[in-house]
Structures are given as C-alpha cells and as structure tokens.
Length: 569
Image 1 (cartoon, one colour):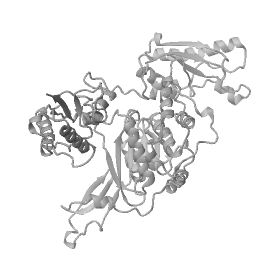
Image 2 (image 1 turned 180 degrees about the horizontal axis):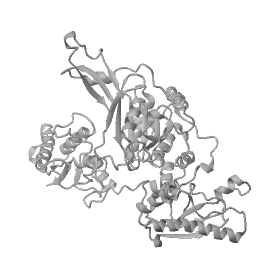
Image 3 (image 1 turned 180 degrees about the vertical axis):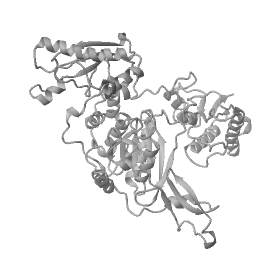
Image 4 (image 1 turned 90 degrees about the vertical axis):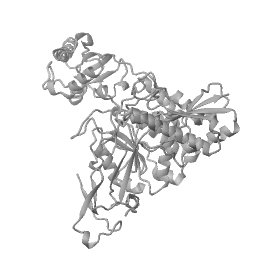
C-alpha cells in the first residue's frame, strides 16, 4: 500500500529549534502528516485545501474509460481497476457523480469474509483516494461498529474526507436523502462522487440507481425497469422481484432535484445499444450468494462440469468450483432439495444417450452421497439429448450440451417484499417500520385529529452527542422541539411526561443517569420557553423498552430517544 508522508508548511510553521522534535500523526487508514511534538492539528484547515485539479465528470469518464450504464469498472470478483479494489461490479450511474456496485468481501484476495458485510476497509480507502466524498451501504447487516469515515491524500494531491452512511433502499425518506446527496454532488464542484453499494452490486444498488435515472436522466418507467433487470447479471428470476419493479415504476421525480438539460447531457450514460440475452444467465454460485433470487423449479447449468465424449466420470471433481458451490448451497440451506439432470449432445443413438446422461448424473449424485448429503435431498435423472442449450451442428458447441443441470425442487422460502430479508426484527419488543413512523412527533404534528394516533411520540432526529445531555442548537430535532413548545402554548390543558432512553451499551447504572439527564434537558428547555413546570414530568429509563435491535448500530441510534407522553386533565 501507498504511504503518504507529508510536510504541510502552510498549516503550521516549524521553528528551527523544533526540527528535531517531530511526530507523525495518522489521519486516515494509511495516511500520516508530520507535526511538531504536542502540536494540535487544525483539521478544518487540513480538509479545506483546494484541489490542484478539478475532478469533474469528464475526468472520471476518461479515468475509468466509462461507457454505457452496463459498463463495469470492476468485475464480479473486484478486478479491473486496481485503484478501486474493494468494490465489485462497479458501474457508472451518473458520470463523475454517482456509481453503483457491491462490496468485494466474498472474493477478496487477502481478506475474504462473508458476503453480507459493508465495504472492506481497503475499498473505503481506495474510494477516498479516488476523490469520492460519500459511500452508502444499502443493507444493515454487518454495519455494527463499522467506521463511518476515512481520510486520505486524493489523486489530485489534495486532502479528502470520505463519509460512509447506512441508508435503507426500501425507506422512502432514505431514498430522498440519497437523491438529495446526489443532487448536491451533481451541482457542487467541491463535492465528490457517491458510491451506492449493496453486497453484490445487483439488486438494491440497481433499485436505487433506477430511481436516480428516472430522477436525473428522465428514464421512462419501462427503461428504468429494464435497466434494473439487466443490472442483476441474471439474478432476477424470483417472483418476489416483481414488487420492486412496480416500486420503480411508481417513483415520481422530485421537482426540487431536477437538473438542467445541459447538465443531464453531461452526466447521464446511455443504455447499451445491443443487449446480448446470453449474458443474462444464472450460475450455481448464485444459489450460494443470492439464494433468494432463485425460484423453486429453476434449472441451473454447471458450466464447469464438462464430460469428455463417451465418458461418465469427471477429472478433478474434488476441486471443481461448481461442485464446491453446490455443496455450499446444500450446507447453507437445509431445506434445499435438488435433482441432478444429465444431458448429452445428439451424437449416437437415443438409447445410448439416455443411458450415458443418467450415468453422468449418478456420478455427481454418488459423489454428494459420499460427502454425507442425505439421499432424500438429492435425486438424479438422465435426459439424453433433450433441451439443447447450444447448436449441435458444430463440434465446438456440442460440447456445451454434454452438461449437468441442477433443478431446484425445494428451498427455504424468502418471502416478503424486500430484496433481502435481513431478519432484523426478531425481538418481540421491536416495532416495525410503519409503527415507528407513526410514533414520531413530526407524524403527530402532521396528523393531528387522526383517529389512529397513540399517546406516546418520539422527538425524531433529536440527537445528543455521545455520553452527553446537551441539546443540539439546530436541526430537525430542535425544530420538532420548538413545535412542541408552540403546541403546548396553544393547548393549555395538555400535560406531558418526558421519558428518556439509552441503548444497551455500557453500564446500566450510567445509562439510567444519562437518560434522566437528557429527559431533564428537554424539560428545562420547555420551561425556559414558557411552559409551566406543573405541566411537565421527566424520567430516565436507561435501556429499558428497546424499540429496535441493540445488536445493530442503527438500532442503538433509534433506542437513544426522547419520548413525549401526552396526558390530558
């Protein structure tokens, strides 16, 4: 890895008697500056250094040799552009503004791990060095305790800060935030590109990108849906994806994020002129990585299982990648039941081909039994020359018809409307997304008089600094607090109880004290703004009554809340 040792004379002056007393201070993942011992760095000045070259859309078009919307800067295994290693299936959405892809965890050459994780650290740092300002992780799993920023020396020799966010692709308010951030990047030359990513770079990132292309590039409903399908690299066959297609069609662009025709022409890549349907195929690896994408009844060709003419055994079956993936799929899903189908080309007699295909299928079947997989989960059948997938006219293509196909007989049902079921709401105490939305104080103000309102509301977006009870001086949470003041002045009969909560981190005794201090801070603010103390009660509850999973950072953020309970005389 590169290491940057920089002496920044315009940030601080080193006197001659201090030249022998220098320290190195780490700024980013792999970045340092040299400073006098005991000197405090002015980070604001450090990050305010103006770039030496402008990282405009044309710069990125040329740097990444960007083509149409399906052009991959990095491929399925993260290769293709070394300076962006850590990304996967990375494609342009808006030139120099927004890119989509996955996180290269599963295929990482030096630090591979479970696919269901945020971007690896080298991926974050490489994006930082490439001038990206923002990364957005579209799932929740694995975000626990993950770093939310990195700093680096950018390719234009300026300092760059890369901010990492977790936003939900299925949440309309989060979609709005992503569009807002993208609009800022598109219209502000000081803001670098955004990298939107899921695990593989197919479903969730494609969904958000399809919405963005409707917003900023004027794609029609069907063009946007076709874009989503094409960008899944063939993993789009599950019936459950139809609802996502409908959501794409239902999206209506926001007027506040419209861009000019000239900017649109500059930023928007085109769809491919020719779409090769043969590229949209599913391999056995999909059954491991995205099992929810494969429906029952689907047949998957084992492209790496190749029998020589007339042969019924396979060389190197122990190390064959497709056989290894097949065993992994059986391991991951205990409900997976398969049929192994054997096929031949049309050379020779039909009876011989039927026998040959059955023997080939049985060879794979016997191998799996020998590995300990139960017979009730596996069956086999020979189909002879039926259903050729290539022409039998040529020797080179007949070879592809001598194949093994895996038919999915049964599997775990991945239901619901979401692209990936992360099973986050396993606690009985945890409320669902819709109920949480209706528990917000802003929802109360917008729907006063509605019949379905409860009595307890969370002051949404009221965020306290870590381990502190100081109210923010501005922001949406402060605005909601001011609305509460106005409401209580208009409704003199209303009394409230202010309940403070923390997440489950740390010592509970400290949590109780902190939650009470935060509730009292709200109490003091209301009193200072003219609400009679006799109408107010405050109490701290510590980590009791969680409404989101404490094992996730996003859940802990929700649990650290102030609830307002309305009490009428």
